[in-house]
Image (cartoon, rainbow, N blue to C red; front, top):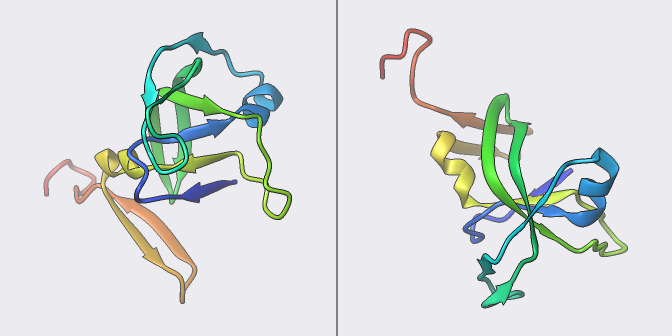
Length: 111
């Protein structure tokens, strides 16, 4: 379960989800910017993470690990940031229950 935060420049993973999945991490000295973590350094990243969201498979690099943390109300495995836009245009239609990522390419690779 991921939350979409279009203001976040990067995708983040909750440390609890990393532990559950048994994902490998590596040390990092990246800085995390944003309202909650302005200029704070992270200590772990997942080198490669493949996610399927909105029918699109995405391979992200150096996904920042935070926490483990839980809000008590809604426990999420991570936050999808605006970096997912590199895979295409994000379409959200809450009325119809649609979340998709469209590359704008046809099956033969043409636009």
